[in-house]
Length: 360
Ligand code: CP3
Image (cartoon, rainbow, N blue to C red; front, side):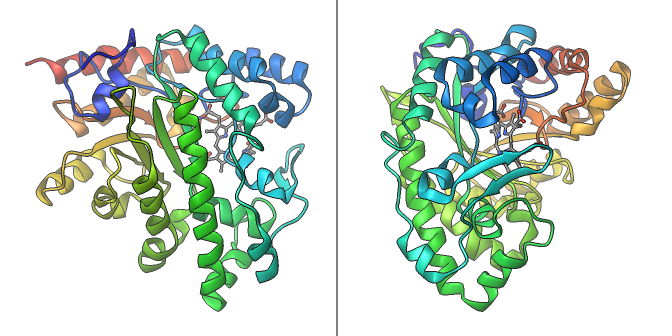
């Protein structure tokens, strides 16, 4: 297969094709730990102003690629653009995270919720995708993304970040039909949004299910995974003759990997609370078709010295073992107080230490 990419390790690993070394990218690789991000962000004004400008979103997407030998770029945007386009009124209060002006607190509000047309209400995201794709010029693939229906629903019903999930779990247990109505609408909105990203230039997709892990196994299946499966079923999987791989990442969902493997996704994201090799072997034993694994270094390892970072990288690589099918990443987003020099150590260590695992 010919791909118009100078570096296609990331796509190859997701498709279980041979690679020279293990590819790596980092969740939240464009972000506040980079002084150049903070400078662009200050120039833009608010975080949403940065997302609304295709040129500035492109600038910050490329910043980590200038510093580090990363194998993928990820669209600079946010998962909460979709609820914002559905009319909930998103803002980011300094130090408090996201806030919705109009959280969903009634069946009527959920019934009235529109499904946005990504080419219109989310035009600014599509413009960012096409601008970034052009600027990348085939250097590395561009990952598009969305939140999972369950994760978006938690923010939309709570009105912002939460530790208790009182409103969304209250809705799930007391009025499951209304919760399903919301999740069904979101699965349509997310499918349209991701497909529009592919049409505008995204070369791989990732669904962030940040809060699926707060559910019981039975509820995870019914209220989160089921809707991610609907999305996977509705996605464009080939564009211009190239596979568009999709990764599902449920934070805290490693215990359900063999179930997620049946979703039809190409890859599963893992956090650091599971051993990646143990998950790989359990999938092999279950005879699951070859699914790739992404992860799973504890982001806090980056607070340590270079020696420790290299040891921990070596441990994850050894745990996964030989062959393709592994995309290295942190188990969750990089923290804002990390020294960028440690990130360089990480990226270079992954490439250098993984080579023996890919020799014939
Ligand atoms: O990974 C990347 O580099 C691409 C960009 C990206 C952002 N958010 C930029 C961002 C991606 C993929 C996301 C996803 C996202 N957003 C998730 C899922 C992944 C995860 O972390 O679990 C979630 C839950 C959100 C919602 C969100 N956005 C929160 C809770 C916050 C506040 C976080 C904080 O630390 O203040 C955001 C804001 C946000 N999104 C920032 C960035 C770089 C910080 C904004 C700033 O500059 O002030």
